[in-house]
Figure (cartoon, rainbow over the protein chains, first blue to last red):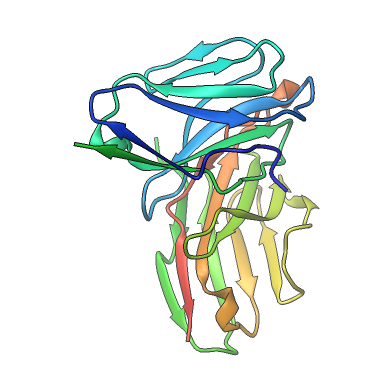
Length: 108
Length: 116
């Protein structure tokens, strides 16, 4: 079973920040937090990952709470092309377990 | 550079037939994964290869499913005596073997299998 809990769906207005939460209260000390997204009919796409510190790249920012029991993926300026299912995964090594994810709809 | 490729992109077969699905990982990636995604569902892990060996086959749903990897590169997933419930998108991913437990998987576009 997935070790993460995410809301099933969220809406966001185009141009606004999208904040996607993820709970992972049973995360182990050496497990990474990964975020992937899947746009309709495509394979999942890597977005970002982190261990303890907050991370930022050209796609998004990842905020991990100090106790590491939850995290938030931030898309700073959502576009219509960001409409997708977003998966939060915690893992050490090779074993990825995908939950149902959050379906983000970016609205014009 | 080239990403993960899978073939065929679509496969329609009759119940009871065998099918082979192919995955070409990113060059140099030592780890390879197969997942299955049924319509409207999340990804279901099937099997993982490190090099040519499969340390984790726990996700294969039945003995009709098998996979192999040769030369540390191409992998084939074989489904024997297909059933209608095998209809799904079969996704392949690959990754480098990294120290410290970090593992970024790169996914292919998938093969959509339809069993009539």
